[in-house]
Image (cartoon, rainbow over all chains, first blue to last red; front, side, top):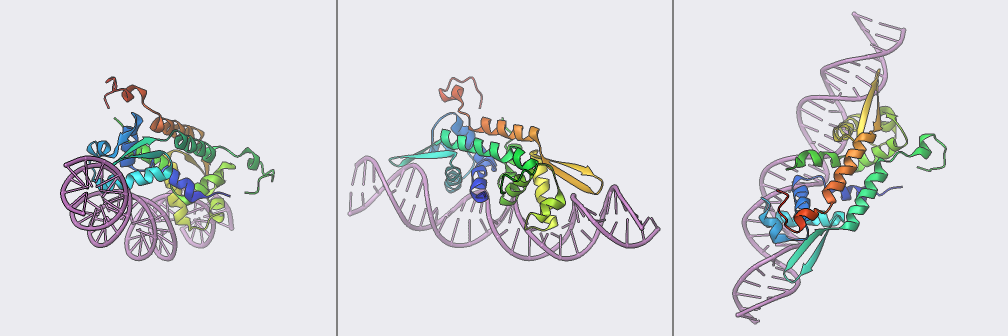
Length: 104
Length: 104
DNA sequence: TCATCACATCAAAATTATTCGATTTGATAA
DNA sequence: TTATCAAATCGAATAATTTTGATGTGATGA
């Protein structure tokens, strides 16, 4: 039994061109939202929208510091995504031969 | 320089609840479209639409046999997705310290 | 050939996602 | 307190995705 909606949410992070650009920027280390903004051709509210999706996926984390928020790639969240992808594409040998030992 | 649209397309496969269900069904081995259909609460044309997205992502391949089409998870496509995810979330040590050896 | 079956494609409708300007919130500093 | 700045949220518009019934296509078999 799977919560497919929650799993889909993780991969939403990688489904949009703007978000892939943001991830690319974060690969070189933690960045303030204002730095991200000046490297992208989107408005402040649009950036905020995408940062929310990225943070909800767990792949990115935000760190509030005074007025600023610094974003970075979460090692843990990335690991979860990798393991999830592995699991979603791994062949299920057990049910492959209808051995009946797996319910669904 | 990245083709973000092409990369996003790979992860579209994992962004939708119906497609995750289809992948789960395929994990236990190759399935005919008719078998997928009777295990999902969607119409035939909707299934066809999702199978197209899955095949376009490379994660699923279709094998035509007479009137039927058999779908299965592509080991190669899955590998590509895994490596891509790895690359998108890996820290870029080189630019991290602004050594300048990486253009963008 | 003609009927049938499996699947793809089309066209239109419904639902979601994305975008931006305006506004709000929350923190900082004068 | 008041002004200012960074970021989130709101509201409305637009764009993209998803869905379905109807139809088209291509293979099979009578």
